[in-house]
Length: 207
Image (cartoon, rainbow, N blue to C red; front, top):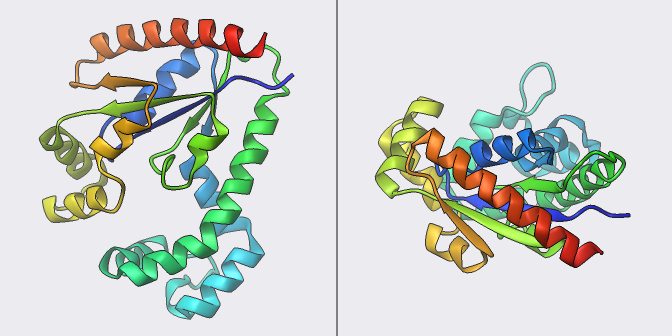
């Protein structure tokens, strides 16, 4: 029997991964789409070949691995290059995510599957879910978190934010929205309520 699938998204710095980790403590199986993307760059021979054909050797390190920083600098500065990268990587990523979801289905003690994806909507992965949660936070708070976590400038943090759908756009796709003010105790309580809601919803849909 397949598992109930929940998509969690949010703008960079919103705290969506924190919400996913808290749900894991309640028994959810997490599918981390960032890890799926890294897996593609490290393991997909087809994707790496196409990256080399399009971007050249300069985006590869001496050991043959993709230079993620250099590739990131290129796509943040050029929308056409970003589109080219997405066309190469995203189809392989989506297949990898589906495989990861399938693996979660083998665990009997899993309450539901959570897809942790900043690009849940952009990749149309929300179409693979039964329920979508959007985690939100004020822009100033999100930028502050990005600067601190990634050790980047405010300008770079703004670039990271603008590279995705806006927070308002992501909210439109949500079945539920969680506001992450930065109070971890409050967030834990909200996730506890969310977890119960998801369990009840899964029983309605799957049984």
